[in-house]
Image (cartoon, rainbow, N blue to C red):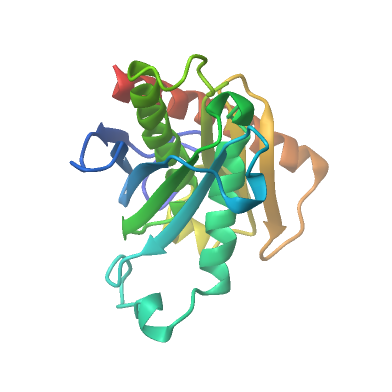
Length: 237
C-alpha cells in the first residue's frame, strides 16, 4: 500500500489554474497533490546574443523554491549569493524540455523566459514545473499569435513530465515525497503529447533495477503524461 492510499498506477490530483499573474504574458498555478508551483512566461523581443542574426528564438527557464516550501525553512539562495547545483540543474532541465516542443525558427529572434517558483513541495517539483511551464509558454505564444507578431505557431506539441519509481518493491506512478525519499529507483520522464521521449532521468537510489522494471516504469509514465496533457488542455479552454 502506498502511503497516500493510491493504487500503483494512480496520479495525484492535478489542477492547473491559468491567469494567476496580472503582468506576465502567460501564467498558471499547477498543483500535483500537495506540490504547488507558480509558473510564468515573459516575452523578450530579442534573442540571446549567441543567436543574434540567426533568425531563431530561445526558450529558457529559472527555478526557485520559497523558504517555507518544505518542512523546515530553506535559506534564500539570493542571500548566499549563488544558486545551488540542484537549482541550476533543474532550471536547465526545464529549459531543455520546453525547447524540445518549440520550432525556434518559427518563434523568431525573441526569447521567452519561464519562471517556476515552488510555493509548496511534496515531491515532483521539477516535473510540475515542466508541465505548468508549458501551459505558461502556450499562453504567451497565444498572445503573440493574436497580436500578429507570429504568423506560424512555433509550439509543435505538448510537453509534460512525471516521476515514476520502484517503491517497496513495486513500480509506482507520480511519487510524492514520502515515496521519493524511500524509493529504491527514482526516475523522471519527460515526453511530448504524442508520446515521444524528450528526456529520462533514472537512478538506482537504494537498489539496482532491471530492464523489465524500466519498461514497466515507462508504461506508467506514458499513462501519466496522457493524464497531464488532458489537464493542460482543460486549463487552456
